[in-house]
Amino acid sequence: METWMAQPDLDEIDVSTVLQALADPMRLRIVQLLDQADESTCTALDLPVKVSTVSHHVNVLRQSGIVSTRIDGTARPSRLRREDLERRFPGLLASILTATPPRRLTR
Image (cartoon, rainbow, N blue to C red; front, top):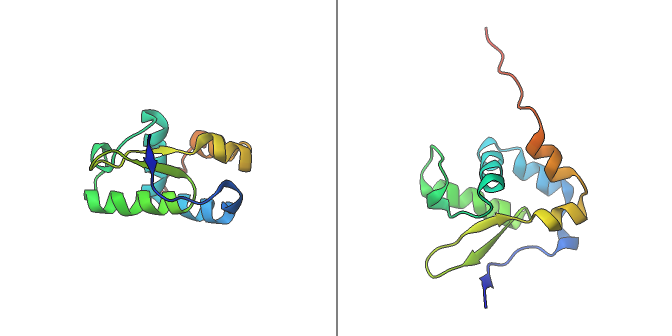
């Protein structure tokens, strides 16, 4: 039997909380990486910050209802709550993942 860390129930997930969590570029990058990997631990994600920072961001994503995290010994692999988010906010996650990133302005 798998053990999962606490996360909000589907009906408790608020769109403003989801969008606020995804407004952070590092958390958006984590979501993009989890979309590609299906499931990953903080240490396995290729990000330019310390693992403790990644862990913090994943925790925010979990508390926002975007990812779920299971307990596997000392590892904590996370995955997107793809189906849950699709039921709660149809098309939102797909739109975010396929959005063209903004161009950087040059001076």
